[in-house]
Length: 555
Image (cartoon, rainbow, N blue to C red; front, side, top):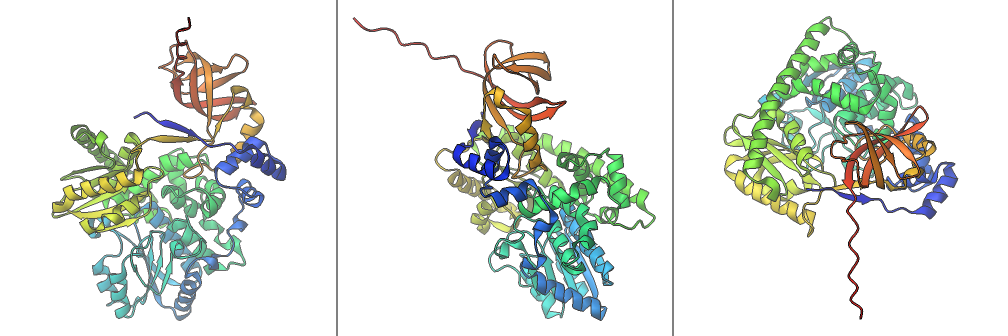
C-alpha cells in the first residue's frame, strides 16, 4: 500500500503575522500553525517551555480532595498502600508518590500489579486482604478508573481509595474518595500520563508554592511520559523538556547504572524509548516488576547489582519470546490475507499475554493499520490493541463491547479480554466498525508533511530555529519537507547529494533504488551540521514522465 503524501495547507498571511509577533522566520511560524499553535502566547510558550507554565496542580480534577485525604493520613499516622500498574508509566508514578509521601513523613508501602497472575488493575484478592490489615487508604496508580465494583467493596470495608489514572472512563466508572483523572475535568492535565499526574500530585503534597521541592521527580515523570507515548504537547511537553536531561544524569543509582550499561548519554527521546524503556518494561511483562520498582528509587538498598541482573535477564527473555511471536504472527498475517482487513486480529494458543502489546505495536507499524494481538489460553483470551494515527481504537472497541468481557485504555492503545467462543464474531465486528470509521475511501496510509519547498529555501537559519521544537515525539514530530524534481547523485548506499540545478544539499538515507538518472521527489527532515543543511531522507519517489502531447488532428 503506497503512502499518500498530505502536505499541510500553507497560510502565508497568518504565518507572516505570527512571525512578526514572535520575531521568527515565516516558515517556523507555519510549522507552529501546523501544530495548531495559532496565537503568539501559545507559540511563545511552546518555543520556550518552562515548568512554571504548568500552573497550579489544584486545577486537576479531585486533586485537592485527594491531597487533603493524604494529609489526614500523614497527620494520623495511618498506613497507606500504593498499588500501581507494572509498566514504566505505572512504576514511575508509583515511585514518585511513594517517595513524596515518605518525604512528608507518611507510613507508606507499595505493591506492583502482576498482570500474568491477576490481570490488569486491582485484583479482588488484594481488596479482601486489605480488609484484614491496618490499611485504610489505598492509592491506585495507572489503574482503577473503571474498577467501580472493587472500589465499592473497599468502601464497604471502611477503606478509602484515591485513583491517579489517565485511562478513559467507561460508563459510570468508579466513584472512589478522589479520582484524579484529567478526562473528568475541563482540560487541565489532558494528555498527561499517570507519571505526569503523580508529579503534579507531588507538587501539591510538597507545597505548590515551592515547586523546586518536586523537581527531583522530573526524571521519573519524563521517563513515564516517554514510555507511555504521551503526546509531547501541552503539559507533557513541559515535563519532558524539564526532565529529559535529568534522566541521563539521574541521581537514582539504578537508573544511572542502567543509562551507563545501555550507553544512554544523550537527552534524546528516541534513545530513552529505544534503550531504557524495553529493559524497564520487560519484568512487568513477565509478571513480577518489583526489581524495576526498586531500580527507580532514590535509595540503594544494597541489592542494586542483583536487581539490574534480574531486569537484564527479563529483557533477554522477552526479546527471545518476541522473535518467536512475530514470526508466528507474520505467518498468520500472510496466510489469512490481512490486506483485506481494516484491523488485523491475530491470536494463538500459547502466546505469552505479557507480550501482546509489543507484538500489536510492531504489526501496526509494519502494516500501517490497527492490530490486535490475542493470547488464546483457556475460555477467556487476553489481548492488546494498538492503533494508527487518526483512528480512535478505544471508540471502536467501545462499539463492540457486547462481545468483550472487559476492555480499557485510550485512543491509540487498549487492553481487552474476549471469550474464545466470540473471537470470530469480534474480528468481524471490529473490522466493520473500523470500516465505518475510515469512511468511503477505506484504509489509506497517509503521511502528513509540514512544508513543500524548493531546495534553495531549506536554509540553515530557519532549520536551526525549527530545532527549538524539540523534544520531538507523538503529536510533535520532527518537521518534514517535501522537495520535488531533484537529481540524486549517490555517493554511497547511505549518502548522496541532492540538486535542483542551482542548489546542492548533502543527504542521508537509503538510496539503493536510485538509478542515477531522472528526477525524484523526496520527503526529508532537515538538520544543520557544521553550518550546512543535511537532509535525512525517509521517502523517495521517481517523478512520473510527462504525458505525451496529443496528436494534431487538424485539417
